[in-house]
Amino acid sequence: MLPPILPLSVVPVTSQQDPVRPRPEIPAVVPAQASSGDSTVNIKHHDADQAALLLREEQQRQQHKRQHEGQPPLPDEVQADQPADDGVVDGTQRQGLWIDIEV
Image 1 (tube, rainbow, N blue to C red):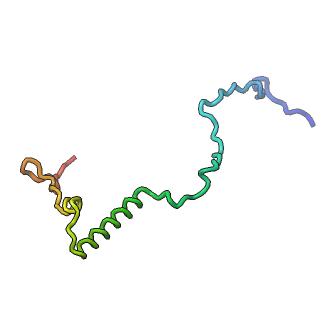
Image 2 (image 1 turned 30 degrees about the vertical axis):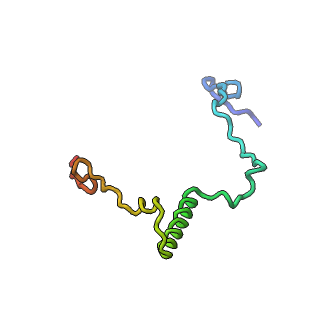
Image 3 (image 1 turned 120 degrees about the horizontal axis):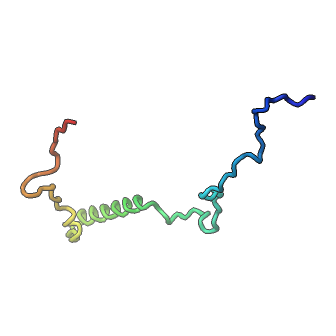
C-alpha cells in the first residue's frame, strides 16, 4: 500500500510536537480507606436533634406525672410556663408588620 500523498505545507502531527502538560496541583482522588473502629454501627450514637426531642418528651412526661400527683412544679418548669416577651421594643411591636416595597 502506498503512503498518502500530502502537500508540503502540511506538517505531520507526532507526539514529539505535543506540548508538555504540567502536573495538576490538586492531587488525584483516592478511594476511602475503611478504618477498623468506624465500620460498626453503634446504637448509642443518636442524632443530636433526636436526643433533644427524647429529652424534651421525658421532661414533659415527668411534668405531667407531677401535676397529676399534685406535687409542686420545679422552678425550671414554672419559668418555662411563663410567656416570653412578644418582641416589644420601646413600646412598639415589631413582629408582624407588613411593608410594601416597590422596586
